[in-house]
Image (cartoon, rainbow, N blue to C red; front, top):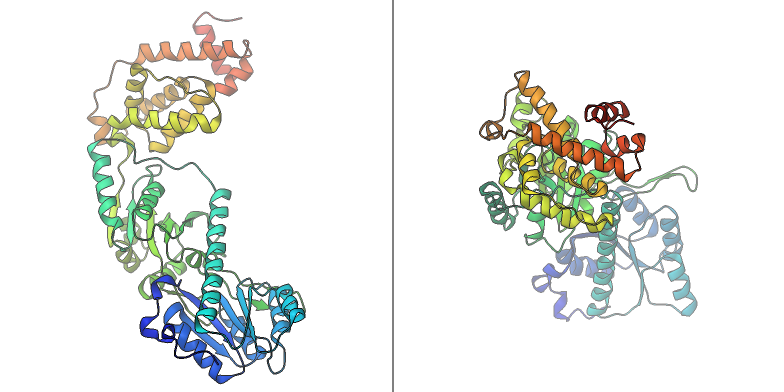
Amino acid sequence: MPDTADPSLQPATAPREHWPLAAVLVVDDEPGMRHFLEKTLQPRVGQVHSAASAEAADDLVRRHRYDLVVLDIALPGISGISWLKALRERGFDGEVVLITAFADLDTAIEALRAGASDFILKPFRVTQILNALRQGLERAGLRRENWVLRRALHQATPAADGLVGDSIAIKGLQAALQRVAAVDSIVLLTGESGTGKELAALALHHNSPRAAGPFVPVNCATLSPELIDSELFGQAQITGSTPGSGRPGRDGLFVYAQGGTLFLDEIGELPPAQQATLLRVLEERRIRPVGSEQEIPVDVRIVAATHRKLADEVEAGRFRKDLYYRLQVVEINLPPLRAHKEDMAALVAHFIATLAPRLGVPPITVTDDELRYLQQYDWPGNVRELRNLIERSLILGALNVSALYQGLARQDRRQEAGAPRTAAAAGTTALPATTDLHTLEKQHILAVLDSVGGDKTRAAQLLGISRRTLERRVAEWGQGG
């Protein structure tokens, strides 16, 4: 029996802050050992279940999710090693620490081959078992972090760099994010598409006490309605009637975000059924994996974002009013680019500096006249649209004036058709740009044509226009042939 006089056994002195929130299963046929481990681990990890046999433990594993299993080898009925092999075959990937009073080298080797994470001989000291279990939970945490990193790399998309600039609008946004980052409240980020909501969520995370934990982004609009529950909350293991059949258990994004931040982008796209489930999770801080009867406590900060006006969605019956109010603890609106065009030069310089090395191309020079042309456009795609323009321009070797000209032409057509102008656009003094912009367009198109040896088909592809349009432009300038 362990040394129960060890002060680390007492729950009151348990160093809870050094232990991750986790679910642990203890499997041992000795009641004293089960009681000792339950009493020792409960204040440290938050959730501990126990079983006296592999058969009873198997029933628990089918219904609940565990981060770590403490397993005795010598059990009545199925032995610990035999049950461990069956667990691994069914897809259980949690940590397993084997304990036994009778072991030799062959047993230890067999245990490790069966998938044990650690192997401890009885009797053991409290510090010995605690160190083994803490290391096992740290390994489980590293696996979650690695999964998050792999997922982020797999889904990597350029960040919408919307926080660059010195305008009043951006400085106000930065100050608001700094204040809110220090508290653990739910945050709702609103604003048009392309304004940089994910970057704002990252800023909240990195400036918060949770910065050492994972940042897990998920776009609710891209989740299949049939898989949303299992993606967010995980699913319990289901065993089929024949060996190898059934469905392995899996963790959801809430579990992967333990101790960190879960960013729910486009929350307005969440179906009604999942809105109700999410509301319960936000209120109770517990999730229930699909197919499980057990709820799992979660320790995550929620940051949600939407380009929709959720108040209008509530009025239309498409979004739950109670969930809207729960998310609206702190609401931060990100300004559209047209509201802070004075940041254009800083944004352009930022994108050139970050994208040119990534693309492996030399930086381009943007003149003051070109910057003024950029400021005439309303940028309906916001900072993301500007970023895409700079990326295309870097590939072409000069500012992509043709794309800007097309955007301004569409903007002019909307205004001629009577479309209301934004307050920001209405307050901007339009420059007499038509002639100069045509000149810039001509210079750019002819430069691209020259760079491809006069190949109009290739030049049209690079310019993003049709060959017929290119030929018409060239004919207008008397450059045919």
